[in-house]
Image 1 (cartoon, rainbow, N blue to C red):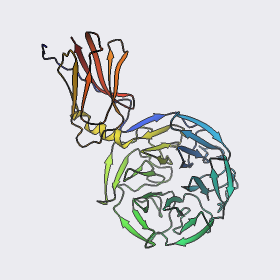
Image 2: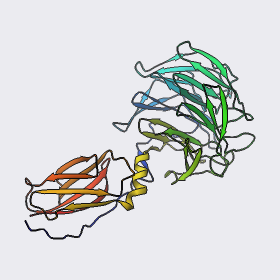
Image 3: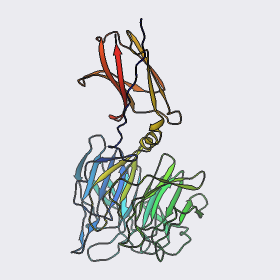
Image 4: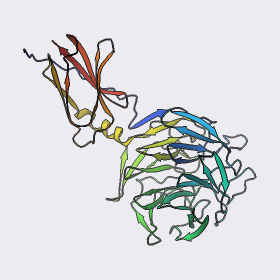
Length: 398
């Protein structure tokens, strides 16, 4: 077999990604902000919220299910508490819990409800025992829910779903807070940013075992409120927000490493800078959308940390096909992704007209394929992630 050298023409196609973010179908309801979102089972739920924009204050009680498999929204049973905005919640045991917030009369409520997606129904639960409030945070740890802060309060409470009861826990050791960010990470609760007599970038860790709080590293150099955040794959993330109410809107994004207690700035959120972006995680991904900068939004995004790592390492990625030309077998070797765990990568060989000849998942850095059933001629090969092309080249079969 005669083997000759060939120049591989590699291309990069990442413009459709946007720094680990992929835009999905717009939210199914009207554009709004101060919404509530939960992940329950295999679906995402968004709803409630309001818009004003210089006009009347319009509140919502609609509740929408997003199916990641079909990228489609379906309206579900309206929230039992009626039109409400700036409510908080968490998910435990396949039930989503939502409560507190502000209602059309401007009253701040303590009501609390559970949503069961299996029956598409809401059920009233024991009222939140603190004062009525909006802009609090909620998260779940080891089968217990936690809800606190909001409306410049600092108290926190634990919810037991089996007993449908609340127990006070240690308050966050700061002044009262509103419009902060809260999430569970590694068995701890984390709360930070928001307004404490003005925007702040402080960050606190709650230990349910000792019922105590510890101050952690501040979130970047800039105080912010009305931000958003989530925990994913062992890291915490805080993004967007503004420096004072209806002030300068941010689009930046920060990643927290709990082992090092450090923050690293990532590429900006690719959507419009805004406040009141709402985030939630499901599986290996985060989902974020809605919010306002004076204009209300309904765009919806998926964040994939693996895609972000791919983008950071893409310049180092090389693909070697040998022998090339080939007559029977070709081996593809991938270099430059040694620090990235491969998954959902696919190598495809197509005709020049785009017909797929071979498609194989990549689980390691080397893949050998038979070309004995391929006609002689030129082919294209490409490596893709979730059907998005990363790099490609040309293969000759003799």
